[in-house]
Length: 195
Image 1 (cartoon, rainbow, N blue to C red):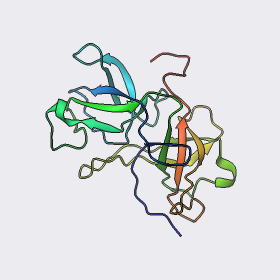
Image 2: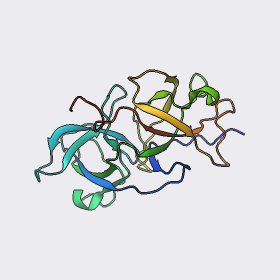
Image 3: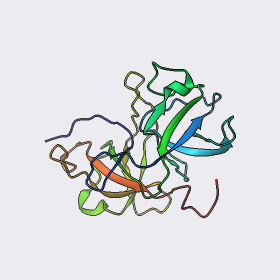
Image 4: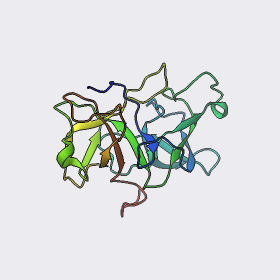
């Protein structure tokens, strides 16, 4: 049975594929950041701090970035004065919360473009993710695993840990959009080169 095709970006989880809330750090998106961000968007540090002089500034990660900071798990619309906004619109200053533990695990759907990630051989391989588009109605990310990139390539940003062990997840059926648990292969905390 094929899975429901419902991308939701990166959702923090346990090793069993159960959603949970890890310790989170507040980060800021600058008012001049022209890229929209969503719940589940992977981000990187910009090297700057917010106007308070403390809060790190982030931006949505590109698929070519190699120092991932974590994925947005929630926003703080009250601090931004946007009570009705469930995502960060382009060019809007806003606060968000991300896990800063480089060992954090995430659930994410694969795009199954070019075929599925081969379950029999992919555990422990690395993989890339797709470009953020986002859903402005739900505020949820549309980032997915880029199925066709799974390989033993050190420069890919994500590590495939295992398929999500859940009755509604079958990563082996054709075009399945299977759910996977991944970790950060290229974390800004563990990389030897600073941001």
